[in-house]
Image (cartoon, rainbow over all chains, first blue to last red; front, side, top):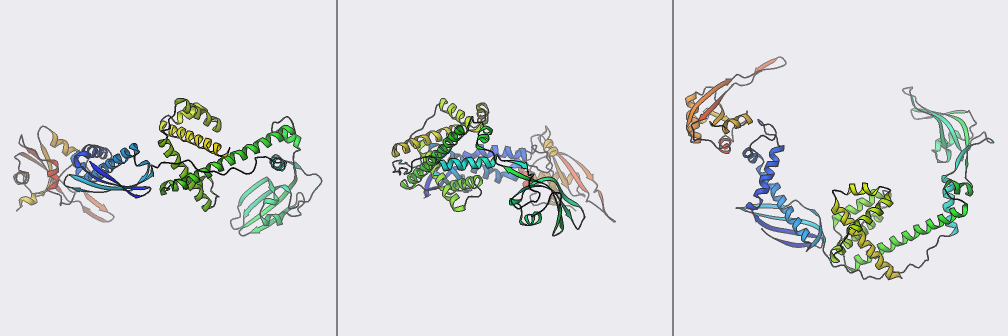
Length: 391
Length: 106
C-alpha cells in the first residue's frame, strides 16, 4: 500500500494512492458474509444462500464497500498519527478503479489542520468597573414584583375597560354546521394583550352582559363574569415569598446576582475577543463542515438570532474548537482521574443530575468525556492568560 | 426433434437444489423442454458441463389454471429433471449459472 497526501486548500486534503487487491481480501469476504445474512435471493431463505451466489449478484457492491472501508482505515490511521491534521470532519465518496490486481483510489477529506498556535496576543483592558447600580436592582425587583403579582376580585368597578384583566365565558359556534367549536368557561383574559376585535367587543361591558360578534363562518359569544385587579406585592412580602428574611437581604442578594451575571458576561466577551485575535494572528482557516455544525448549533439554541450574528458567532465557536484542539496536541494536555471526577462533580452541580447518573451516561463514551475534560483544561489555561494580560 | 442446446432451459438454484448438489451423490436440478426425453437430457448435461451422468429423474408440472374475471387461462407446464452425476464428477455453481445467463427466469 502506498499513498500520498496533497494539500488542496488549508482545510482540504486529497489522499491518493494504490493497494493490492489481496489487502482487501478479508474485508471483501466479511462484507460478503454480512450481505449474505441480510439480502433476499429468490429460492433461498434469508441468510441461507451460498456465498458463490451472493458473490455473483452482489460482488461489485461488496468490493465497493471493502474498498471504502480500506480507505476509511487509511484516513483513520493518518488521523491517529496527527501529523497533518488533528481531526477528520468529513470525506467525499472515494473514486477508485482497478488495474490488474492493483486498486487505485483518490479521496478528498476536510479536516481540522494541525497548526502551531501562538497565544501571545494583546487584549484590551476593560474600561468600566463592574458595578450594579441601584436603578438596575430596582428594575430587577420591579420585574419580580410583576411576576409574583396576584389577581384579586375588583369590587368597586362594574364596567370593564381595555386595561383590565377579566373573567369571561367564551363560546365559538360554527354558523355553517351549527356546531359549537369551542366553549371556554371562566377564562381569565388580559384584555391589553388580546386581539383588536376582542378589545373592541368587550370595551365597556358590564358584569353578566352578553355580547356577540360574527367573524367569517364563526359566531363568538362573550359573557363577562367578573373583573380582576392585579395586586403587586409589597417589597416586604416579595422578600418573604422569595425566601429572604427582609428587604435588605433581598436587595443585597439581587445586587450580587446582577454583579455575578455582569462578571460572567465580561469573562465570556474577553474570552471570545481573545479567541478572535488568536485566530487572526495565526491566520486560522475555518473548515466549512465545522462552520455549518456550529451554525446549526447556534440557530437551534437561539432561533430568533439574526443570520449575520449567528454566522459571526459560529465563526468564533469554530475558531475556538480549532484553537483548543491544537493546543491539546501542542502542549500534550494530559488529564488524571481526579480531573474527570472534578468535572463530573461540577457538571452535576450545574445540571442538578446526580454524579452517578452522569457517569452512567458517559460509560460507553469515555473518550468523549476525556476530550471534554481536556477542552475545559485548555479553557482554564486561556482564562489564566487573559487574567495575566489584563491585570 | 430437439437440439441439445434447446433441451435444458435453465438450472434451478434454490436452497433445496443447492442442498442436493452438496450431498454425497451430486444431484442437479434443471427445467427442461416439455418434450425432452431422459436420454436427451443426459446427453445435454454431459456435453454442456463435461461430466458423466448416472441417472435422470424427470417430472412434469402441469401449469395452474388461472382465472381473471370472466377470462380463464393457465400457466405454462414445465418439465423438471433431477440429474445425478457419476461419483467423482461435480458442476461448479458459478458455471451452472453462467451457461444460462441469457435465459429468462421462470
